[in-house]
Length: 186
Image 1: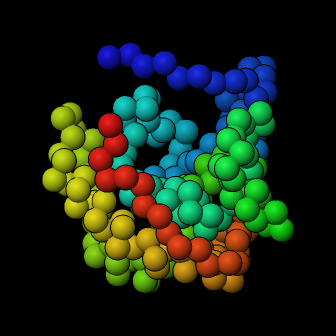
Image 2: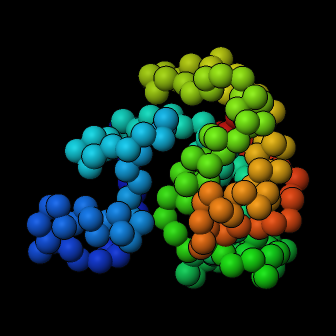
Image 3: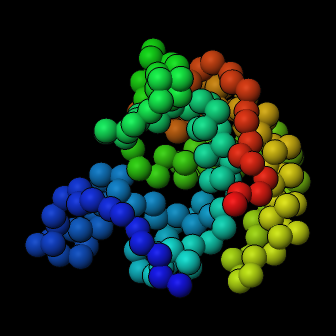
């Protein structure tokens, strides 16, 4: 079934040749040209549809770390918030928040190299994107990610993280308690 995706135009590069377009995309951090194993890919190797994306458990773990303020991403312009719903940028005003796309991928790539995270994941954690989804695999993945979350939170606050992910990535040196997303979303 077709789904709607809302988007907005960042720039009009339609007059560029294809090679120059992709160079600009990389320069502006508007694309992520790596596979889930962290290997470089070409633009032609990008999935043709969102449904063709590969499962990347470390990106999921990275999103959990972000949601727990392990690193701080800037609030989107015009984001509506309840008075009691402080964002990580609100909670950590001294941290330079990251205003970058594909931030979870970059942090996920860093977490992939952290021995304590690797040990907690104990091997392969990805699931096939088959339809219907394999709920047993997804439950197993959730349990592995939940087990890896404390190590990921420690790793995110480590000084080595700032060096590995670079400037402008929302590094937060204060270790936070990781909070996993609900196991079964409705």
